[in-house]
Amino acid sequence: MTAIEKLATALIWTIASLAVIFLMAPLVITVAVSFGDSTVFSLPPPGWSLRWYERLPTTRGLAASLWTSVQIAALSTLLALILGTLCAIALVRGTFPGREAITTFLISPLMLPGLVVGIAMLQGFRAFGLRDTWTSLLVAHVIITMPYVVRTVLAALSLFDFTLIEAARTLGCSYLQAIRKVLVPALAPAFLTSGMFAFLASMDNYPISIFFTDAWTKTLPIQMLQLVEERPDPMIAAVSTLLILLAVLAMIVGDRLVGLKRLADF
Image 1 (cartoon, rainbow, N blue to C red):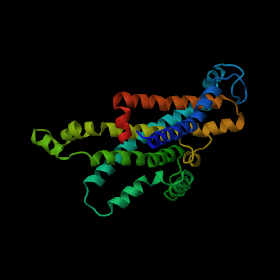
Image 2: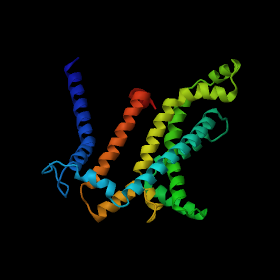
Image 3: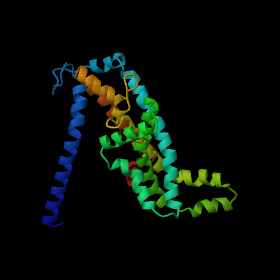
Image 4: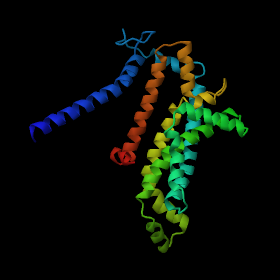
């Protein structure tokens, strides 16, 4: 390795390390503050305590908003997996014109600002007479989670050999059995990856949810914003730490079931 190559490698590693530090610093600070005993955000904290975690179960509205977020995230992820997979299969196997335009349309919620998508959904739901808060939240979250499924499953299907299904049918399997025994196992990593990202995106979503909540139905991010406005103390850091832990656990489960390298391929 020449001196220039060594210098370039060192520069790349330096830039990469600085980028990792820049991205991880807010998370580390949030976790550290959540274990402090100070009533204000201070780093380093004057002492260490679990007081903010002990207050979480008794905080007004927090458990209800968490349950709402879990319900919405789970149902929207399930519906997004079903609808997104069907759309991906149609786009891969279909011969109709405009497939690229439809693909772009399906993943467009990822390209547009959340506030723009939220305002558009609000106007559209009102035009269709959809005014129920919980149903509006669910439909909105299905729309914003489907792009993760469509994009991931579409990439997996483009690498799948559909002649394997025909081979399974010649060996005695029905069409549904061939789908279940051949296609579903091959797409399992894509399902896991897209489902994981869809669930986390729904749990953390704020710009869309803000348009479809009321005083009785709030998601966790909306409730956290209200708590920050009412009493900006490190309890919010404790909630944020638990959400960080949720993302870490999802990555661990994905690594155990599929492997991080294979997850990254999608």
